[in-house]
Length: 119
Image (cartoon, rainbow, N blue to C red):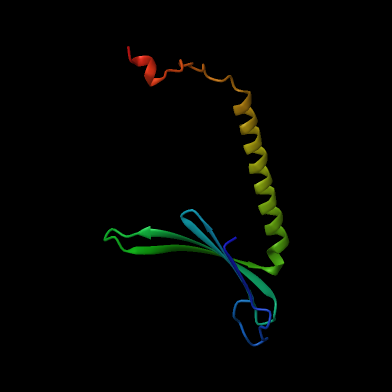
Protein backbone atom coordinates (compact mmCIF):
# COMPACT_ATOMS: atom_id res chain seq x y z
CA UNK A 1 0.00 0.00 0.00
CA UNK A 2 1.36 3.31 -1.03
CA UNK A 3 0.32 5.72 1.67
CA UNK A 4 -1.87 5.98 4.74
CA UNK A 5 -2.91 9.07 6.64
CA UNK A 6 -4.87 9.01 9.86
CA UNK A 7 -6.27 12.15 11.41
CA UNK A 8 -6.64 10.98 15.02
CA UNK A 9 -7.21 14.50 16.36
CA UNK A 10 -10.22 15.36 14.23
CA UNK A 11 -12.83 17.55 15.88
CA UNK A 12 -16.54 16.76 15.82
CA UNK A 13 -17.26 19.87 13.75
CA UNK A 14 -14.55 18.95 11.30
CA UNK A 15 -15.78 16.96 8.30
CA UNK A 16 -12.29 16.36 6.97
CA UNK A 17 -10.94 12.92 6.26
CA UNK A 18 -10.36 10.76 9.31
CA UNK A 19 -8.28 8.24 7.36
CA UNK A 20 -6.88 8.09 3.84
CA UNK A 21 -5.04 5.36 1.97
CA UNK A 22 -3.71 5.54 -1.59
CA UNK A 23 -2.99 2.36 -3.56
CA UNK A 24 -1.26 2.62 -6.92
CA UNK A 25 -1.95 -0.39 -9.13
CA UNK A 26 -0.68 -0.19 -12.69
CA UNK A 27 -2.60 2.41 -14.68
CA UNK A 28 -5.08 2.92 -11.86
CA UNK A 29 -4.91 4.55 -8.46
CA UNK A 30 -7.37 3.68 -5.71
CA UNK A 31 -8.21 6.07 -2.87
CA UNK A 32 -9.82 4.82 0.35
CA UNK A 33 -11.07 7.80 2.34
CA UNK A 34 -12.91 7.58 5.66
CA UNK A 35 -15.02 10.59 6.59
CA UNK A 36 -17.64 11.38 9.22
CA UNK A 37 -21.31 12.19 8.81
CA UNK A 38 -23.05 14.98 10.69
CA UNK A 39 -24.04 12.36 13.27
CA UNK A 40 -20.38 11.33 13.71
CA UNK A 41 -20.78 8.00 11.89
CA UNK A 42 -18.05 6.88 9.54
CA UNK A 43 -18.48 6.29 5.85
CA UNK A 44 -16.02 5.14 3.22
CA UNK A 45 -15.41 6.62 -0.19
CA UNK A 46 -13.61 4.35 -2.64
CA UNK A 47 -12.34 6.23 -5.68
CA UNK A 48 -10.79 4.68 -8.77
CA UNK A 49 -8.73 7.13 -10.81
CA UNK A 50 -7.36 6.26 -14.23
CA UNK A 51 -5.08 8.48 -16.30
CA UNK A 52 -6.22 9.03 -19.87
CA UNK A 53 -4.97 11.21 -22.69
CA UNK A 54 -7.31 13.43 -24.67
CA UNK A 55 -7.15 13.66 -28.46
CA UNK A 56 -4.97 16.76 -28.15
CA UNK A 57 -2.52 14.94 -25.85
CA UNK A 58 -3.56 16.51 -22.55
CA UNK A 59 -3.78 14.36 -19.43
CA UNK A 60 -7.26 13.76 -18.05
CA UNK A 61 -8.24 11.68 -15.04
CA UNK A 62 -11.35 9.51 -15.21
CA UNK A 63 -12.76 8.96 -11.71
CA UNK A 64 -15.40 6.63 -10.33
CA UNK A 65 -16.58 6.79 -6.72
CA UNK A 66 -18.43 4.45 -4.39
CA UNK A 67 -19.88 5.80 -1.15
CA UNK A 68 -20.24 3.08 1.47
CA UNK A 69 -22.22 3.80 4.64
CA UNK A 70 -22.07 1.85 7.92
CA UNK A 71 -25.42 0.10 7.40
CA UNK A 72 -23.95 -1.52 4.28
CA UNK A 73 -20.46 -2.41 5.59
CA UNK A 74 -21.25 -6.02 6.51
CA UNK A 75 -23.13 -6.89 3.32
CA UNK A 76 -20.51 -5.16 1.17
CA UNK A 77 -17.69 -7.01 2.94
CA UNK A 78 -19.47 -10.37 2.56
CA UNK A 79 -20.09 -9.74 -1.12
CA UNK A 80 -16.52 -8.64 -1.75
CA UNK A 81 -14.98 -11.57 0.13
CA UNK A 82 -17.31 -14.00 -1.65
CA UNK A 83 -16.36 -12.62 -5.07
CA UNK A 84 -12.62 -12.68 -4.25
CA UNK A 85 -12.85 -16.25 -2.91
CA UNK A 86 -14.66 -17.32 -6.09
CA UNK A 87 -11.96 -15.79 -8.29
CA UNK A 88 -9.13 -17.28 -6.21
CA UNK A 89 -10.75 -20.72 -6.39
CA UNK A 90 -11.29 -20.49 -10.14
CA UNK A 91 -7.77 -19.13 -10.66
CA UNK A 92 -6.37 -22.00 -8.61
CA UNK A 93 -8.37 -24.50 -10.67
CA UNK A 94 -7.12 -22.94 -13.91
CA UNK A 95 -3.52 -23.07 -12.70
CA UNK A 96 -3.97 -26.74 -11.72
CA UNK A 97 -5.40 -27.52 -15.17
CA UNK A 98 -2.43 -25.79 -16.81
CA UNK A 99 -0.02 -27.86 -14.72
CA UNK A 100 -1.85 -31.09 -15.60
CA UNK A 101 -1.95 -30.33 -19.33
CA UNK A 102 0.44 -32.27 -21.52
CA UNK A 103 3.60 -30.26 -22.00
CA UNK A 104 4.36 -29.39 -25.58
CA UNK A 105 7.15 -31.31 -27.22
CA UNK A 106 10.35 -29.82 -26.04
CA UNK A 107 12.82 -29.36 -28.83
CA UNK A 108 16.31 -30.20 -27.80
CA UNK A 109 19.14 -28.24 -29.25
CA UNK A 110 22.71 -29.38 -29.31
CA UNK A 111 25.17 -27.36 -27.33
CA UNK A 112 27.44 -25.63 -29.81
CA UNK A 113 30.48 -23.56 -29.07
CA UNK A 114 31.98 -20.98 -31.41
CA UNK A 115 35.23 -22.97 -31.50
CA UNK A 116 33.29 -25.94 -32.92
CA UNK A 117 32.52 -23.89 -36.05
CA UNK A 118 36.13 -23.10 -36.88
CA UNK A 119 38.12 -25.72 -38.83
